[in-house]
Image (cartoon, rainbow, N blue to C red; front, side):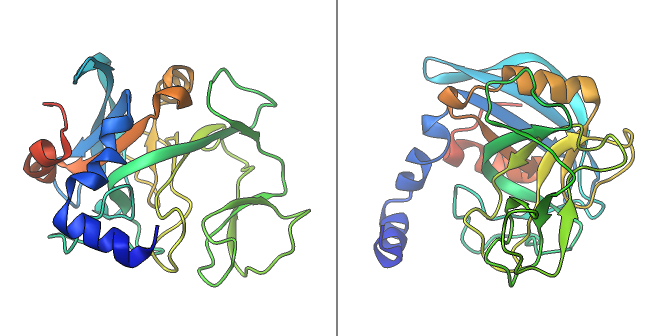
Length: 238
């Protein structure tokens, strides 16, 4: 769609954005923290039953970026938001509504319905804003390199043994932030560089539960912003 037409539609018919967000989803993950700067948060899964979302199993603990959250670039345009805005390298997890992309891990396969990428030593996530591959997972052994910085995905620790790409800043806008994942945490009080991390058992449950046919969505917000947006975004009660 022409960007000008899309902007006019969103200005006069803001519910158009909602049709592209939660309205088409039957699975929802909600992550909320107490405030913008918190590094600890709680995640809750929901499944749609008719017109409403109902909680699925128990909530679980997650950790966020070392500097909390900042508004990210997701499914819904929040306009001129109150609060911090995420930028490359700021140590913040993105706030907003996001689709979920490919799952990845160290094993050749995984128990998941999501598309799965087995990580080899040459797979990288590009965090160089000047690259045409910014915010993409690429195989550096086969892709022509036009970046000066990236993150090697096959690590010497277990953080990426299982993970899921969060579609923040997709398609990518330079400097808006990159390489945001669900992944395994170092521990329940150890923050990330901007991802959302959790216990290995919880990410394994996510991989098993998520179904791309149900258009799963992540909503990640501080509690006050969640309550402010709950009616507008048609979010369930926490």
